[in-house]
Length: 264
Image (cartoon, rainbow, N blue to C red; front, side, top):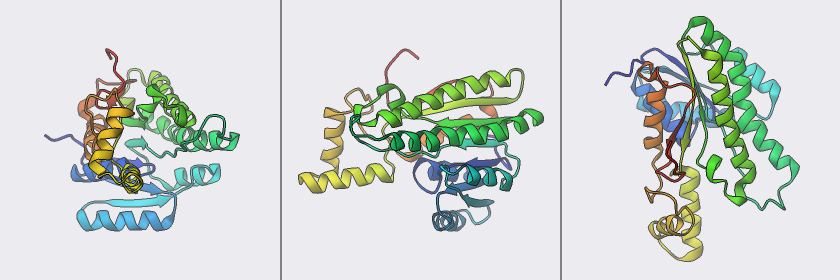
């Protein structure tokens, strides 16, 4: 299927690994021009080199930016070309008891996870409206609804992202611009792989048994009963970047393996 993404210009924040990196590859495979992002110049250069090796004929580049630094975000916006597609994916988390987590930890997660998307969208949405076409996606999480008690600050940011996407979509009436949020469930990113390896080393179990126990004892609501692959999430993101998804706007699209339940 031709998703009509050839020569579309895309920026993905937080895309040197995990879901962002997998999404970059799916977009390059469709012929899009992709600009990736990481916190350090070195991580961006490594990721670009990998992508250039796999996609030698495609247009891929990258910029480093620390989204906790407003000046760096403003400079990044000025460096970037006009975008057809903006994917707000960058995010951090800290697992800690509510009683132990400091104000600074809440503020850091809000600044990076939420305000990064606010600032980028504020800069690029008017340009998309002027050209009467664009896609903005916020990559949220099942934690927006499940809200694990050791991830309260992270969950708050992911709920906020869904609200922002919903509100911004109201500004796109009668245009070719859509703004949606994607809600992945437990996904086998590098961080999840490390979690499984660490737990296996501590418990003496295999990684497969640790994964099975996680869904049996912790993420019991999952219907999938396994981690989704980053490629499974990326393929959903890819579709909602496409002109083919023009009738979906202001929606929260779940890729959570059924973990959050609900009729919608």
